[in-house]
Length: 100
Image (cartoon, rainbow, N blue to C red; front, side, top):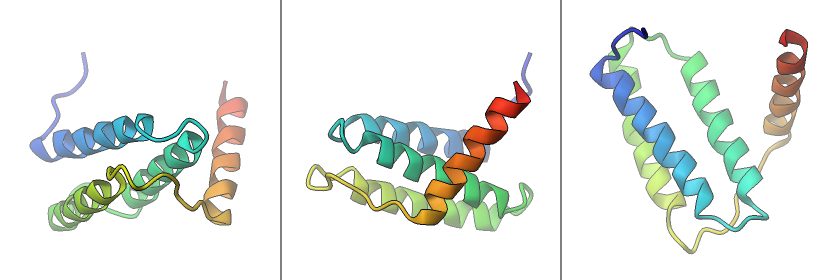
């Protein structure tokens, strides 16, 4: 049985699920880019913040909600992926295949 989640953890997971749902509303040709964008941003933000730093997490949640509202707009059809994001994705794929 998994440990119970705090309210803040539930908010972060809800924002992540909402972001993944947003990806499905975008054109099929750009969905992989949006998916990478969401995964990269959540991972890098999570790894840069202490789980005990509630103030920073709340700030990141507010910022993430505002950013997601912008990306949820139907007029947003594509997003830009940096080389750093692409490199991160390659390293994640490599670590998944070696750990299996």
